[in-house]
Amino acid sequence: MSTRFLAAAAPLALLAGCTVGPDYHAPKPELPPAFAEPQAAGVQADVDLAHWWRSFDDPELDRLIEAGLAHAPDLQTAASRVRAARLGVVQARAAGLPQINADAGANTIRFSKNAGFSQLAKAFGGGGNGGNNGGGDNGGGAGQGVALPGDSIATYSAGFDASWELDLFGGVRRQVQSARAAAEAAEWDARDARVRLAAEIADDYLVLRGAQRQAAIAGEEADRQARSLSILAHTAEVGLVPQGNAIRQRTQLAAARARVAPLEAEARVRMHALAVLVGEPPEALIGELSVARPLPSAPPAVPPGLPIDLIRRRPDVRAAERRLAAATADIGVAVADLYPKITLTGMAEFISTALGNLFTGNSLQLSAAGNAMFPVLDFGRRHAAVGIRREQREQAYLAWRQAVLGALRDVEDALAWIDSERRGNAELRSGVADAHRSLATVEAQYKVGLADYTPVLDSQQQLLTAEDNLAQSDVRLRQDIASLYKALGGGWSTEDASPAPATLSGGAPPV
Image (cartoon, rainbow, N blue to C red):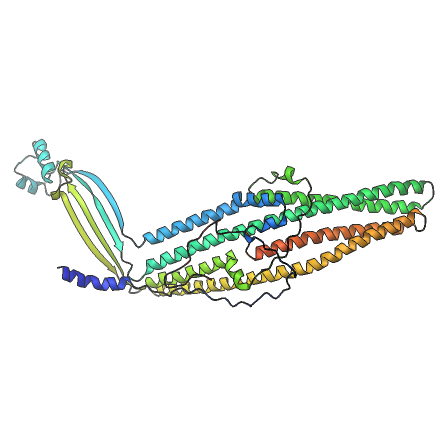
């Protein structure tokens, strides 16, 4: 008996090691040896990419980003998706294991006195009147599992049933691979959410401080022009200068004052945005952030490293690679549906008409069955499903390629903007110094009567424009540096979320 069983089980054991569908191999990106855009020359300081915002040396910015990383709804949503994806792995793994259920029941039935077999039952029951002998017959029926018409019978049962679909062609194994890769993709997505959140908070904070600085410049200029107007108005009243000079000065003062309100509104809007990003109501940070502070200092130059390092660092690229792995495993799931499915079922139950002897050997009832399903004709449905999975795998590959190209572009763009802004910022800073000297010269000439007030007005306007342009350039330079940190995948560390090693059966770990 055992020899025949082993002979029958041997083919199933061999088939159980078969896994249909393509094995996954991590793609090899085509990368340039180095980035093309110029990088800052000189000594380059080491920056902790995991906490790159600290390089701005602004405690308020540090606090906002840390609060956002701890409480932002977007990150909580990403964390929930990670937990759901990990449960998906448990679900997929359980599909390849036997399912065991326990059941218990109690049933009673009362037979009709007018049943068609009543005369036959009376003939074999040993009594001619079931109604008169209801008490005794009912007791006997309960004990022997037989009841006459008009009597009742009760049965009790308790047991287990198990079913197991044999994973002969690896469909379940491919499902597990796909679920694991999807869980790893969710983990990388969560890290990418951290990267994007930190960069967005930094961007809004820099714009906020820049708007406050521009508003202060406009306010200072308006105050200076108000003082000039007061002097000029008195001078015009006594006829020393034309009234037109005072009118032109009043017009310029109105324009300077009008610049303040939009800048203050921009600052308030950024306060609202920052509050929402850290998980607070829009008005929560107004009191704290309304106090104007200097723009954070520009961090030192950051070496972008090599393109291959970027691909390893960028969470969005890693997530795209994991989705490609999941899509590859899904092909095997669809291919497995083309092959036969074998299901084994078994049941062990205790059944008795009396609770007293329910759990005895004589009450045990066993049953077993094996079922095989062979696909014969489905009009191409299963083959179409395989084709769909292959196309989805191709789409996942193209999405991964796009993620790689996008990552390279992000770094190149940031380097180009930083190089351009640094040079432009130096020119603007020199221009502000020249504007200050020019204004001082024409004001001195005006005071001693060597020039009229028109050059003074022109120099004031030039200085205001130069300072405003420099303030905007300072913000853009810091935004560009923050963009470079984001492009390099900064903002996460292995301590934040540790994904399981991304290795699939028959495949290779991601680059």
